[in-house]
Image 1 (cartoon, one colour):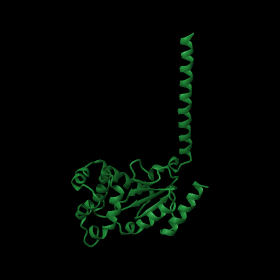
Image 2 (spheres, rainbow, N blue to C red):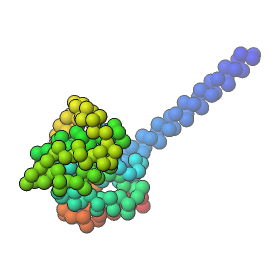
Image 3 (cartoon, rainbow, N blue to C red):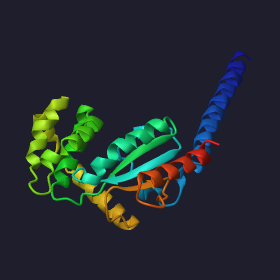
Image 4 (cartoon, one colour):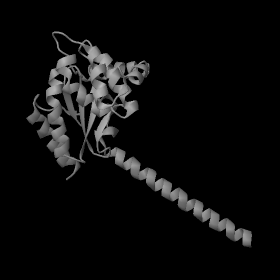
Length: 218
């Protein structure tokens, strides 16, 4: 009788555990159904490896195809930071690469390698800040990035070794394939939850973000 009693207790505990796990999985499934990531072709906009900035649970995705050597990307950068502040907690930035300039692929590999030192976002911001010196269209000097990155604490010797990782070329190739599929021809190109702003301007981007935030957070 005692063993039978323990059997019932064990069975009940097991059923409760399965119920809790099942409820958790169902909740996650329902959240994904409501998420942009659950939409068809969402992976064209966001890959698992894509750098994300902001609240990882934010329901609105600001996807930017950028080129670190692009002057317009540099000019837009402070405006993007301002948008993330204005919609704090509700919008997350997703970076995709559009290496249209001559030295972009090397810089992208450096950015990806900087992740291993926890310096990705600092590196991106610093390389935008110093872009006129290393990325001048008249006289590009990409080798200068290895002089600028130590200024924010990047170990350049380790960085150069990590840049040899063949996975970084795969990331570049995948982003190139996705931007072609999406018809991206210039930088920066923005999407908000897969939608394009009605014009190429900061105001149009803010308007679309505001609309999507209102839908996601009524």
